[in-house]
Length: 275
Image 1 (cartoon, rainbow, N blue to C red):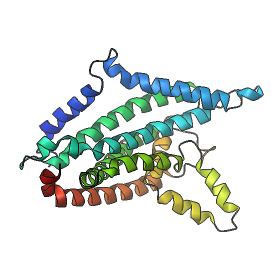
Image 2 (image 1 turned 180 degrees about the vertical axis):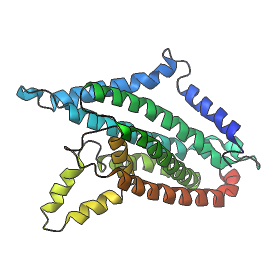
Image 3 (image 1 turned 90 degrees about the vertical axis):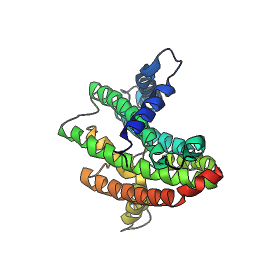
Image 4 (image 1 turned 60 degrees about the horizontal axis):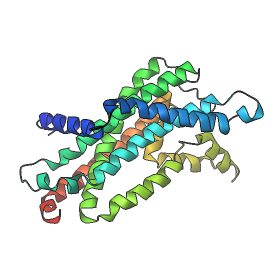
């Protein structure tokens, strides 16, 4: 289906990407300006204000890069899925055409989000390496499987949300609230070993509670795998094994794609009457 409609998907992707910056002075330069600005803010707040600089010690550069690497990935997840929520409703004129493959509408959105993430990841990598926090090596090639799995997950989740929002328009609003909670329940601003420290106070042998909490979070494995590929030092955060994280992320991506595609295709014939 994707190959058959590759030219249409490419045109939609180009329109989505160029439309994002249409009429602005910087144009596509915003792809680079935004992550640079984000890094400067996180470095100032978490590396200087909340770091060791207030004690007269060097700022904690590791925390600034750690948070930045998490924010750029989570922003990709939330932005793509949020746009996908309204993709069917926003393209009602196309959906009402019987021959139009409406399930392909989410693919350009996901492609656009991946491009934005890649630009941000390059900024993170260069800044982290320059500051001596990131140590990229052969694991950097591991970002390709991560990007693929993330794309599959986003397509599946996007289809599921797009289908639901056609019939219940509150889903797009509820999703905005849920992603806010999702971000703070994911080790974006905190480290996974902090939760392990909490559950250990509940008694011996309670480590499985933290493992279950992380395994139930689709964003966790993607986030930790991406940090490992960037060469982040895992002595200050329990990043774990790359392949283990990738396997969990693949499982979540497969589940999302199956549920999303099945729900979308089984209901797409109703969209014309609803939108």
